[in-house]
Amino acid sequence: MLKYSYIIYKIQSWATNGIPIASTILTLAVVHFFQLITVIMFIDLIIFPLKWLHHFNIIYIYLFSQLYFILHYLLLYNKKKWETYNKIYENETDTERKRGNLIVISYLIGSILMFFISLPILFSFGK
Image 1 (tube, helix red, strand yellow):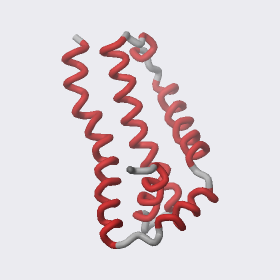
Image 2 (tube, rainbow, N blue to C red; image 1 turned 120 degrees about the horizontal axis):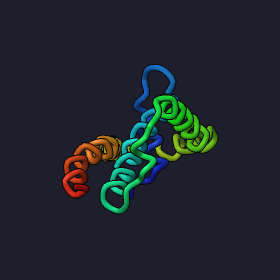
Image 3 (cartoon, rainbow, N blue to C red; image 1 turned 90 degrees about the vertical axis):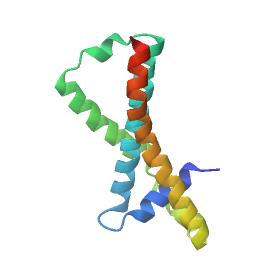
C-alpha cells in the first residue's frame, strides 16, 4: 500500500540540486493541480455546469495560482514529520527502493496523464 509519506520521502530524495523542500512541494502542487482540474472538468461537463468556471479574469488566475502554491506549502510541509519520513524509509533495500521509485513515478506521471486522457472523453460526453 502506497502511503503519502512515502511519496513525499521519494520525491524529496530525488532532489539532488537545489532545495529538496521546494522541489517536493512544487512537484506535489503540480500533480495535485492536474488532479483538481480533472475533477473540476468532470463536475462541469458531466454532473452540472459550473458557470463561474467559464468567466476568468487573468488577475484572478494569477492570484489563485499564488495562493494555491502558498497553501500547498503551508498544508504539506512539516519539518518534523518530513524528518521522520526520512528516518522511517532510509533503510530500504535496493529492491524496495527500485520498486518504490517505479510506483511513485507511475503515480506522478499517471496523475498528469489521467488529465490528458480524460480531456477527449469528458468533452465527448459533455456535448
